[in-house]
Image (cartoon, rainbow, N blue to C red):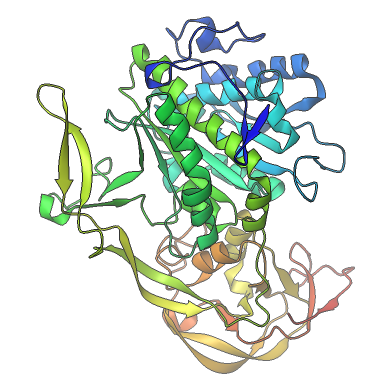
Length: 528
């Protein structure tokens, strides 16, 4: 292992055109696709057994567990969604490679869409390469959790959707999918610095694309880390392998989801979508740096090796540069600045893409009828984001007892909260409309949930809990809230502005009347 310009270079096999590695020594354990010379897909049913075999070969560096077991579709056999933790950390989690001994934690998952196979293949290869292969030196600075196939039921059926017909990558707010709920529980437990979500896209001249977080409430330090620190190294590695790269571009509305908008004049192009329902933005709002990794694909078996090799190169390059810049990553991720003496920040409730006079059009490549690459100019280009409604962060939100489903929804996302053990009369802000509040005084019932804004998932909390949020619980109600039909004047939610006063609180999972444990020890929560 070498370190060059702050990046860890593993000195792997040389590459030929389009990222295809030259022949190298056969690995000790081959993935099922490798064993079949990429002439057969790896079954989603084999993930657990393959990872367990790898763990036996690698020893304690690899631990494998079922993330969740799904019932088989139409009464078929159940399928296990496994997770593998790969780490050479000491019992205290220390590592010699970073300034303060901390390791960078990475969550890597593939095949949210069951018809996109490359992510699954790359995940298995990465588990092997990190634990017993040439990438093992990266574990001096990294700890990696890999979920190879998020949507095994969709993969069995050859569709992007899960067993309930949901698109898993549009479900990171509602969490209707049991796998997504398990994935978010894993995220809360592991608190990764980097989340890598692997996908495939249709045939395109740009064989590798990376989508950065774009939601206006994402900490801008995360986007800066990706664009100015991590991407340059990845772009160089791809260029050296003759893989054409572009930052991810999307068409709005998404052509994969037909809408009433059909006229070309009503569609536009922008960077990756700004909505929070996808993994990239949702996990970035939660405090990690979430990245969408795409490889061009015809989704045919004869292209499997090429697209798997390209995506593997993208992941490998990101892990190398993340390890090499570990101190910079630690400074920007899960490291909330002290805001006690800073102005209260405003966060976005509603936003939309807009044109930017400094970037009036997008230059793009396409293939003509002869198959040759030709440049084109896209005028329907909206790279900017305009915030149309916002509110300041409060000290806390209070969810009244009748909002129990909302409290449970937030807890599924790892949001921390406590409960009042006795009624309290407080100055609060009540919602006049979903996007405006008025001061008032209210007695808050025992059993109400107090949700402090000062917590690591602060930006996700705001985006989920505010009634006027484009991505909030009113517009995208999770299970249990959809049928409530809350009136604007009767929302089970108020805000505490200024400083959070001392309150008689117990843990959020306390039981009893009304939800408070009879043997709980109340404590007065200090103000922030």
